Image 1 (cartoon, helix red, strand yellow):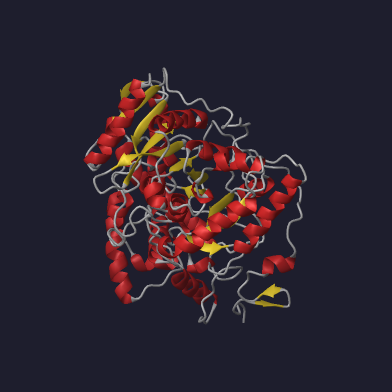
Image 2: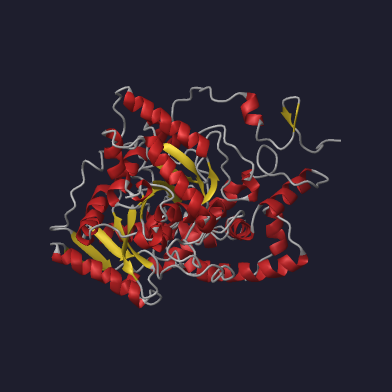
Length: 487
Length: 89
């Protein structure tokens, strides 16, 4: 089998036993990018030279008899909103088109300590605002399962690269579904970790109270491997939780015997495609056969979640994006007469339409006279949603839902209808609002032969339970078949 | 709904052409109508998360960057300083 098709878990064994070198593996993935990415458009930057140099270093360390991390020598792609020292980091925006970070995000420092190989930077919706990767200033990314369709978003490049064999594993970020929805559309695994378990230092901020970096991969154990490396407290991010984490790969017990799985009726209602509903309920029935108990639960606050999400996320975005003023770094407009014009022209030319809409919405809900009616109300709605989840987890261990209401849509289909685009996030935003972890795994295909994803939601810091539950289904179906996308 | 797009644009440091203004006004009104669907809750009490108290790190300086490294990304630099339009006459 071609090396680029294999999982990190398999490749790690082969590298450690010197059956292959990291240079061979990296070459295989780089060749794959060279032959496939013209069509897919997952990468904004490919660092071929850096990747091969890093791979050679890993091979030298192994030859010298050093014992290395299981991630050593594995080629990764990184979403382009995560700062990489010396490698351009654009957030898929004209505003940061020439920005080369002088520092690494904490997750990158951790990956470097584990001797990973950085392939390059992956396309996304501009500043992670979108659900299709179509708001990228630079290029469209296509779904490897159907080139006329979107890969989802905002981590569309990260999902498409994994699905197409253009990376072994990738990092994405999730503010309202930006890892899980593209994972679902591209038929891969994606984890949105518990808020506060992964450092956000060096992640270009969109909505600081909701953003989390997370792994995307072709298997559950690869997802667990990458998560084990990136999680942990960071003195540079005060919102990271003070706690220790176990090795999630070593702790893997793929069984659901005695597990209580909550099925919230609100997530299977109107607006969710029948084929998606049926496919996810089929997963529930399989879990039941494996010894899990299905529990009907109710999460009525879900209907308010989307409104609360867009208020909180946009409010934080309008504040976070105030830093892009054309002064210290990034794009600066060519024409201006004074400082005010420098700001206005830079921001008007540097930001795309969706980013402008979010900044304006955020400014509106925070402005004097509207703050109580919108922002404050949304924050209290957030508390209510958190409380409802707490109640739900008294009667079940994990919650099973569809990841997205439907499978991947066509490029251009929703781009001019913001409300329709926002509806893509309706099943994922509650998780961010409540700060919970959730994993999306593939669970079949619809009649258009497009991947369907289901979402497992856990209580805070229950990632191990999510991995175990996801792996039990993965084992049952014999792994997630990506042949159609990869060939 | 009374959305003053011009004022919002000013506060956001954004500029729109007259054609854009019409388009954004309509789009923003639809979006605001969507986010207005919130329940009437008792909006009193604290908004902090008692489960996750934050702890600031020690206030000790860490050396990270040289001036040149940081100025590399600046749009316009002269004599080690960032250039901006004249602000005081």
